[in-house]
Length: 148
Ligand code: HEC
Image (tube, rainbow, N blue to C red; front, side):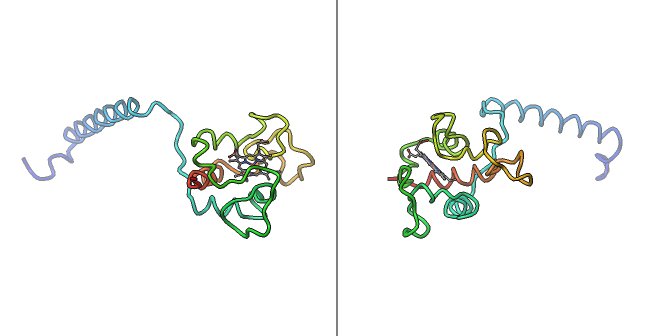
């Protein structure tokens, strides 16, 4: 057999058949390992912290204190975020950041992933959430590091 035999049509067909079989086998194995079919975005702790302390993006420190940013200008309308990563699991943190109103309809905390129920939204921002999915994951990754 010559070295480039596998490039010939017959060889190529079996190569593709093998690749397809492997793909299916790996796909099935992966599906069994991971019941969650949602594509996972992974959060970046540094970007999350930047959003939390930002006076433009997150504005979290308007209401919360956190062990980050300038401690002279932090809020006291909401629980201190120090230790929040020990109090809540990742899905619980995500729910609180994405839509605190889903837990407490009267919450003053903005529903960062929501595009509904917002007041006086400028036309340039209509239909956009305050934070996109990647930013929510970044914030959650940072909150997770705030352990007691
Ligand atoms: C306008 C005020 C306000 C802003 C801004 C705000 N929050 Fe909140 N947050 C609250 C209040 C009030 C609570 C207490 C629960 C409730 O009333 O919903 C809370 C609860 C939380 C909790 C649960 C705290 C705990 O440990 O019990 C987390 C986590 C949280 N906020 C994260 C954030 C993050 C991250 C941001 C910025 C992206 C943010 N919050 C912005 C008001 C705010």
